[in-house]
Length: 345
Image (cartoon, rainbow, N blue to C red; front, side, top):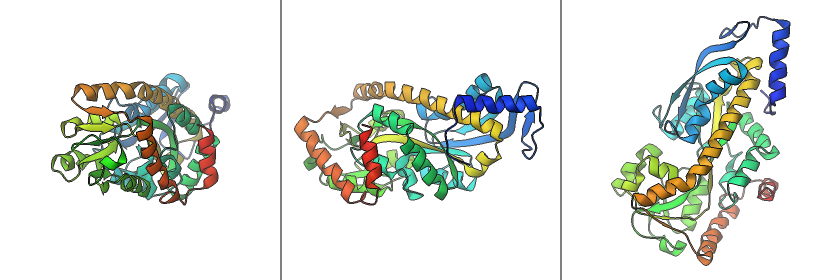
């Protein structure tokens, strides 16, 4: 399917035309029609990494409600939270094979399949929530979504924030500047950009699946990680961590996709409203996520965590080392794409 945007007017026009014709839709045995309602009978299975109530969870779980209330469309979502259907990477594999229909994870995890969104993970390229929201609804996003879909068998859905900026956490000592990092082992994902960033800061990057991270910290396999406050709190990582630094290097974006065959099996008269519902759910989740970033920092402080804010001079040292990644692990990223992204800051 095309990655062009649906508007509310397009969705309503599609529905109105279908109602006027009174046509029986064929070729989609999972679709039933009544005078008032459309229904897609095949359950859509989502395997995601967030917990129930998290913004990344509600950005998917709210879609059936929006479809029912605004578009009189009935669709069942079966949602499996907290990576219960597998590790981060195995769920990304599963959505491509069709074992599950929907999954979501931060953009860094998808780099193993295609690098269309690698630009978002360059350190210090995203300066905050306002820029991210502009990117998510820009031609840049649509262009990169089309590239991703041409190489990976999925439909790209509207993104949602994943807790704002990652903090650099560890259980050994306060980290005021990169000089303090030397010798520490940090859990990372498999992204070359993230691995290079940790190395530039003086750390030893160690890829570990998220579901194994608590035990890895507890047993000393790693000393820390680069993760957002919401996940550090929700998964009780404060029990095995002590110190954090607000390095403000990578703003996390939760990338959401649906299996291509699942999307193609949904009638066009439902696809339009469904994409609008995904966008509305993402908008609501982004708002909630933005408002909760400082809240979770506060909760972590209450739990005994020490969160350090670098001085201007110290922040410059973190940024200098981080931006070196642009010319090393990030050297293959289209320079014009970087320039367009920076222009939205």
